[in-house]
Length: 613
Image 1 (cartoon, one colour):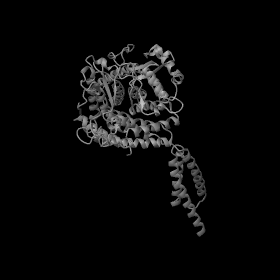
Image 2 (cartoon, rainbow, N blue to C red):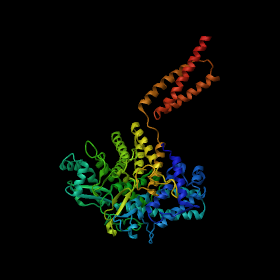
Image 3 (cartoon, one colour):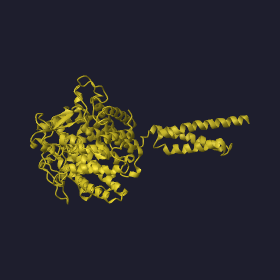
Image 4 (cartoon, rainbow, N blue to C red):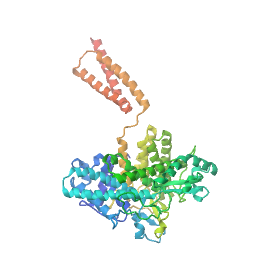
């Protein structure tokens, strides 16, 4: 199934508008106030395409396209849509703001008690989580950009007042989210003889080398990164002084929430509420990926061009960039550790702190590797090996292969992969976090890799895999009811697996929306040029230019009549082909071939005319 970003985004918008709006007003539904994560995901389904795809822009009503207006009829007409979206976002801000005007980042019903006999308490539901911090960064930036463009299109005082009020609340939430991400970052140092140390040694050594050899390689490979972390002790990164000892192992990344004893950030003029953290200093690859996705939006071209960050936020962004780079480099090095087979190629990935293993964790480590490959413009070899990993993960996740009877892999998709949240027991009981978006995450990383690849074969494999994964996801849309055409219903693709059912998942719906935006950006790129075709096209053009020059020597017919028109057409097509030969050699080849045929026809006609004469 071919990915058609415009048409499929319109389908998603139609479903979101029908489900979430009534006469222009946002319906609370089953997400309202229960989880800031779910509420942000729902709004991002609209705001992300509206601010990232020019054809879907809603901040300039005079330019809104007709097909967009048709699918958004429940939101309002051309002039009402921007105002109603502002009201919807203001409603979100009010819902997730505390009594002291501090933004809140409640995980809500996304948290699950580890003890099935217990219910989630109100205190536990209000705990902040990295998913909410990261989503709030993305949503806040989208909103600030939307407001900046829209306010220039209206002169109504009441609209400007609503814009200013929302801008202040959004900027405050952005600052609070960035601070929370800083306070959730951690570096965990541990001894090689500890249980966690032994697990890390087994993961990166793959039981092929002695512990001593692995430790020596770890010390050597991570010496520059360790030095950067030690230097960063003066930049707000909390880490045990034992990291200076090269015999110690370490991990870095994001915990599930604000870590216990994380210091408050007090050097800014305007600091929102900063609750005490309870999370253990244990990095999770899943939450690290989530944080990386949000933080990269702080440095996007749109953020910089529109000047969306104030002075304090720019300082926070630089601090987050340091942690962003540290995490990518650490996990990318771990994933590719050793001289032969990568640890990431040894599926499934085993987490060291939680003693879990799953293809989902392989996918999250691969996602960090993709971030790093994009950051450093990786080599073809790294890209090709990563493509092979993604193909294996799609197969093992039964996205591109058939689910067998009683196949345990169904648990990847339903009910999903569950992680205990270390330290959450301090809230009154251990909590868990469940991930059900394996297929959507897979599609997102495949499209990112395809956009990065400059190898025709690798990109071809990725595009084929992306289309297969998208078809798998598209069949999982809910067929009927209030959530029709949203996600998720695994039954159509896993019909032989008992006990699964449909449920509305804003997590999967939002990630599919992201994938469609990313696919649109991929198709906006120039195709990868083939050096072989470029050389062949040049040779064809050389012959065509020579034959065209020869035909111009003949005065028969002059510049008038059919011959003259044909010669002008040939000259125009040759000029076009020459302009494209480097960037689109296949197109240049296609243009040159009929020109050669036409020149041969002209030469034959001229020869026949000479004989008749």
